[in-house]
Amino acid sequence: MRILITNDDGVYSPGIAALAQAATEFGEVRIVAPDVEMSSAGHSISSSRPLTVKKTPIGSMDAWRVNGTPADCVGLGVFTWDNNVDVVLSGINLGPNLGNAMWHSGTLAGAKQAALLGLRGIAFSVPTPEGKHPDFEVLKPWVKSVLDLLIGIPELRLVNVNLPVGRPKGIRWTCQSVRHYDGKVVQAKDPAGRAIYWYTVVPIEGAEEQSDLYAVQHGMVSMTPLRLDLTDHEQLARAKSLEQIRFA
Ligand code: MN
Image 1: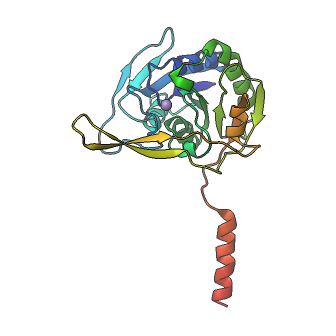
Image 2: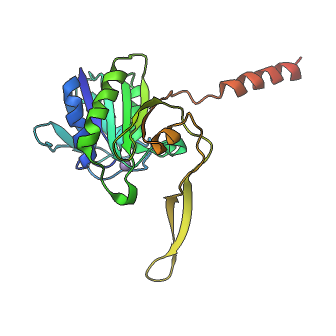
């Protein structure tokens, strides 16, 4: 099995090394990741400038850095590996990708790009409270358990995995928490007194019990199967039925 690894924190993040090390048990591993941090880059691609790929081995593992986004890295990584990749793993992101934050996530976009290409994609993220890095040695066996489970279910094309803070208590299937959005703009001043603005996140409380956010807040590893189809099928059916009435 050919496993392509990417992330949005950049090729030098400790999270991508941990994920690649955990993945070596499952097949041939190759790392293609952004040369700088691309967190919150979402699913953007670089269509108005060329991309370069430079070799940057990580330990004994083959790795390349790209001057692009996570989605770029997956596109290039698959193309330069003979268009012959089975699964793309993205992460382990330093920071959670839960609920509506999924829309902004470059980590998840790496996995989504795999699904768009007809491959399988799995994203991994972990919270970093107060900027503290997690103990990846504690998390690695859990990442391996998740990979063992998910790789064994070929119907799963795209899965968003979030690990909790500290030693996990277990693994749980979840849905995306959609009750709240945590993005917030705050205003500050630059040294010259001019207004500047930062995007930040506010803590979310009261998440749905079956959701990804609830699971991670309660110390569980969260696995959310996702789909690429954004169509609201319920509203589509309703709109069509209304139209039938109108044109009757
Ligand atoms: Mn990131």
